[in-house]
Image 1 (cartoon, rainbow, N blue to C red):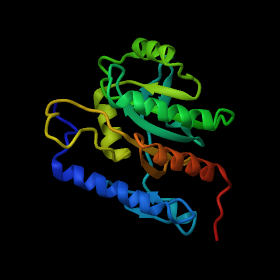
Image 2 (image 1 turned 180 degrees about the vertical axis):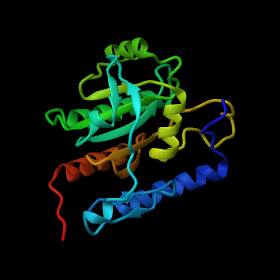
Image 3 (image 1 turned 45 degrees about the horizontal axis):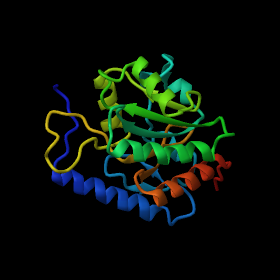
Image 4 (image 1 turned 30 degrees about the horizontal axis):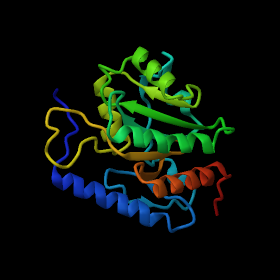
Length: 220
């Protein structure tokens, strides 16, 4: 594989620092924007300022029902992006439990979605993801399990969500791995929050931040 998302210990430290910065940003009433891999929070003062801001942009994947998933499908939706694989027995079940809380908190809001990207897309085809959804009671209307080309998943993780998909021990050379990081995206495709999905209090904050995004924006 020519392109890989393999973190070194230094990259892990940077990622941890970014999560700390994101946590500190939550002390400010309005949600910040995140424009690059440093995940440094930035507050926009006007709508015009966002015209050239970073967005997730276009992508092309498929969900567990076989339907195409792209930017047009999620436009004007608030969503949470996560990364997993169906045979994971360590971190993923805990993340699934926490994401289920997010799903349940917005059960009546059709404009809130969860997009869980498989990091083993060759193994997690549409059929396997459909089985995974049935076994785990995942709502295929609101919680999309995504697969597609490995290059597309890697591109999204690295360049669009700024997510590091490996551990920091050096034990994952040659393999794409999952992460506990959850990323909050607003209806315009901007990154508005980064969270450790393995921690309940972080997910509690994620739920609060989604509610904040669902409120009408207030510009000076």
